[in-house]
Length: 632
Image (cartoon, rainbow, N blue to C red; front, side):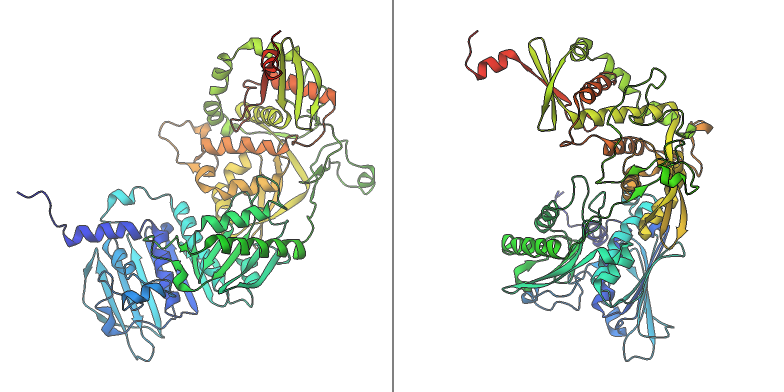
């Protein structure tokens, strides 16, 4: 019996579907592209259960004629290509003719359409690749209505790897947004479980659409005017220094009207922003690139995410020059934000005279506090925050996270047991020599020279202070005199609703203001930049999301609203405390450097920062002797 066999049509269809349809977001992408290619001015995307139960895309485009419906669900049936020469001149979003064929192979699909100039509509249904009869249907106007239900019903291996409803909806929203930015003149709607998340009516400019869709202040969006070099044209939108994101979630590149991933262009754009943005934050930008279609290959990935651009280095240089000039000539100054937490007894006199409740002024990013980095620690203030009163500041118990935090940070003591305590003793008795370039502290002990990274040391100290509070179940928080208003995008707002119980329990108390804004009323005391940390937790649903309750969990482990904070959530929140660290380049006095070393040696694991980098190194005198060619 021969070993090589020709696969059945059913198996071939499912393999092809696996290349194009990875998740509900893939279906949304393909169906939206079909609607855009059909010239629709209004597209409505309705999802249920994150798209796992229902994906519906309705448009008012040109529609599909009765005579074309029969061939719609054959593989490589398309109206956008007719010969191999057309592959060198692709201007439409779709061209392979695989989308409807692939989707219908792994779902229940119903397509209803009325073509322009025809008086009646027609409907066809496909179940797992099996087509049914084409029947008359009722539609009041031209357009197409496609319903995709029970995705992956016949491929359980693919279905079990889908994320939660909220996670899958987030992926679909990430697909929806680029087209909203690309077509500001079109009306685009996205709903989930009957709730309207995006309702983007036509806008007069790309900046206005970006501001509305992404909840950005339009005054901080720079328009990159069209620039030409040869046959290449670039234009776009750039966020100024005030638009800072915790990750690269608001960066969009379009090539000939197609959203793409281009590592080269993304690198150039992010590298230019290093001129104005600090480390650890990322910019917002939208880049539109128009080049002759024969100079770009969009046929290298089944999902058409990646493209290959001819002479990309030249275009990258063009982009760098244009973006740098726009940022330097049109950008605005950094806005300083003051935060007022309640702390009795330390409010400035001019505020106290106005009858305001007592509070402390904490400085936002980019401002220096007059409070020294370290002060002598009272005997009763173990674990206190440097520069803060221990007894006066309001604190709040966080019992729901105690058990989970204890289990996650139990490894700390085990690591400490394996460390060489004699090294700690040597460091504690070391003599401070000075500071090199406001970055490294130099300590002498015996035959060794210890070089301590002041920033990494402070990161470790604050990380353990934060985790100690989480482990004990008592989180110290600062309550703000004036709530900090944080504008959230629709997707961030949904994530906030999903995680509000966890965030409240961990010290980030907030309330909905309406119009996509949230009032941050309190934050963990160790967080120096509360808005940045709050937004960072909302930007990564996979790590910040709640785990499903386990069968043997104790009642006290569950957070209000169900679920528990994941381990990644707890660890990530702890690492946010690093933002309050003494940064490289900030000068510390000798007493502060000694106090920092003492506190570092009190840590369970003083040898590395929370990110795994070394905190200090030791240079032996023998090493220096070899460098100077000394023999004695």
